[in-house]
Image 1 (cartoon, rainbow, N blue to C red):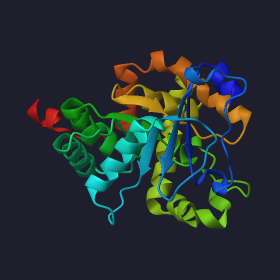
Image 2: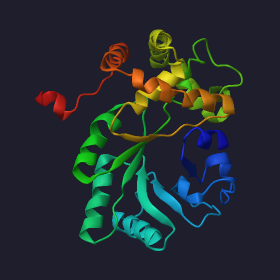
Image 3: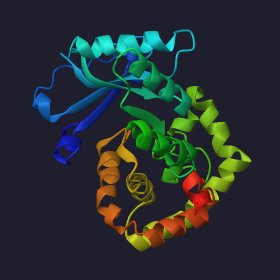
Length: 268
């Protein structure tokens, strides 16, 4: 956290399931609380020894709870000073719009942000659906998994390393995804993308993170790292961002072949 903060990072995202639910985030000792943006995601319930969080996210929609009840609960949390804002995570555009409509109908507080998966191989929601919400109701995008659970690092190019996440029993789904036909096609595309990274003087992970950051609709990109070296490497994406010209982005689009088309594209 110190490395991140000293490198200019001020947003730290938490969730009740991180570290198997055995973690407690204490009051920052070495940082001024007002200089941090701390967010958390809730579904079952969590615990943090903080007076408040900046943004609390409703993690995944709850089909068993009426939308009015969810919006009223989040409004209560904000009015009690436990959070400044609330947002959604893994919600569809329709569900977010419903929450906004309920808030306006009953004079409650609407969500301000959606946490969505976004990376080179997952683009539709962030590039097509969320921009419409942003322009209509002001909902921003905070994205996660810029390296697709490590797939984009290139470490699975020659199989599943023993120490990798995909080798763990709880990540069998990731292993199957990597060794599938689509997974092999992705690895082939990553080889081509690596040539672009080399031309720009960066690593493949740095290129992937910078690619996410270059999207003007993305407010923040959440990084998940397991050691200081990974964090330092990923933060180097900031230096790559100015190099993400329209020509470079077009090159990447050509290799990926998965650029989604919005209504704006069809009109033009």
